Image (cartoon, rainbow, N blue to C red; front, top):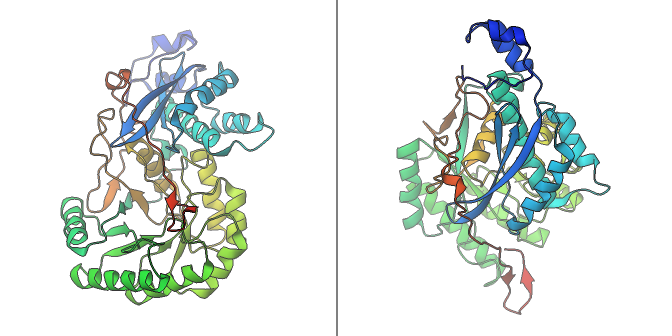
Length: 411
């Protein structure tokens, strides 16, 4: 068991117990803790900026979270400072209480940046709770319901089969991954007649099916750029003969009845949810029958605390959860523990970080799955605090798509 620094408030009798004694471990786990600091570190995940968040305590136990990369990431540190003013001196193991406090302090919903900050703090609190108890976070959630977590490789935008096939085969050979997510746009969505966009997709998918092993699962992410329901149906029909794993987010997520109507018109699994913020929005989607698979993002919805509630709402509708996770290795750790303990989990989006020097031991797939680390408390990974002392932030922004007539669109 990892040694946990003693708080000065640990009862005196604990000092008379052996370092490895059960009583000593219990006393350390139950000793009062207080939040003393929240720190933000400007880092990156490959070529994207990332804000790492540390919550510190008077016992020397720190927890770690990774904030979602929305674009204006430099706005996050002041938000984190504000939340620290609300949480200073609180016991970090009261995770649900503190999560509620951060939400209830605002008269209005916090929005994307507020929820990104709340999620990072929420995950740091869960990390502290696990370390203080000497347990992996998934054990605090009722224990693992599966022994390992299946993943799919994400955001592989290689429309040329000569590029895509060796890439997918390489991931399969190295990590055993046999599920992948690709872009459906062999032709840009606004470059020509829509029927030709769908025809090119059908030909592309057909060629992939011929050249890849038959058991490979292939999903397509339309990235919420299709603005007309009829076009979404037409693209789904193009995919249907070749049995996609799922068709992700063809339309914008805001109008739930449209998703219900879309689902009734297509015959392939429909997935969405990365841009929804809480269990209430997912409940509205599911009541419309608008998804076969929901994809909440643990760093978008405000953290593991809200993610579990969303999963339970989905479970009550017999809908599985496949978490959206285009993030870094720390967010992958958060998702791994959620997935291990969630009965209606389906598969986890996964992106290998090739240049993340701030993490010492990211989870890597074995036979297409992430393995649990039952002997390591908290998230089971270690942050290199010497590395993050140096600011490694890079600027990034999402550009709007410009149509041929000069109008902008989602990209």
